[in-house]
Image (tube, rainbow, N blue to C red; front, side, top):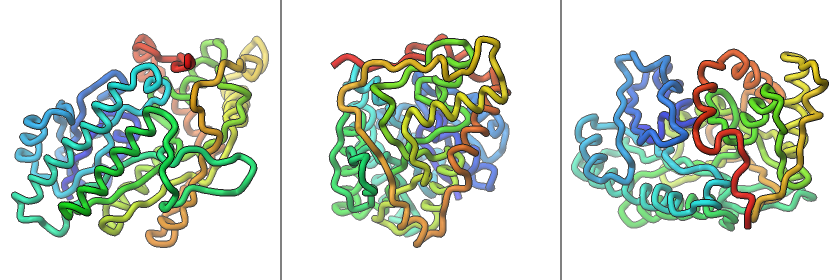
Length: 349
């Protein structure tokens, strides 16, 4: 199968690219190489005859039409997006342009290509989204997000992802474009650009800097190891039902404070510091506006229909992640000069 992956130089997209090439698929990586992209993420497959790269923005209709005509993909996995909630608070326009207008553009380019190809039954447009579109759950009950949970986004980021989900569903209902949707929980793992919580904590700890936690650290997230997510996404692309959505979760709920303390204890064991335990660096900072209390995914559909479950607990995945960062300073060190890296942004109402 030839798969066109948008955002394939990003965190989740590169995990998909690496795994797809490893499994023998041909992959066309389309990425605009914005601030969070890094071609080093796919360096270990870049020389494969099954890999091709195109530097094109998903908002560029002419450029994307040319990519489809040149490579003739069998399927699309659409991951390109602005994804950082903090940055969406400070600058929502980029999120509207990329996540809404970019997805609209991708749908139209894919629809035209699909029609010209004679509407092949095997073609798929797989839209990868987030559990943040569902809003917040109370942290004192056992409720979880299902595929039927009403959308209730809280941030500019989640609102634009919710809008993109609705566009994808509308293109299926109106034009019969064969789409599949997935909504995932919080990802972490190797090659995570150092602006999100897990890499910020690891790299700040190694540098002896404060470990910033919003509010009291009680916000709960379901943590999904990125390589497990990539495995699930390829499975959905292959076996998922057209027009259906699948929630992908790690079945690993932790408060932010619990997560950070786990990272600290792993670092204490693997890279002890002379100044005392890493947990001494924990610093509580002003909470961001619209910070959802809890996300939790009910993964019953993907488990029951497709037989997928995560392969690691959050503790196992975090240990693998810390080890990767300790062994790959050559990857993350050059990224530290990029804007916003190592900071917590979007804290001003």
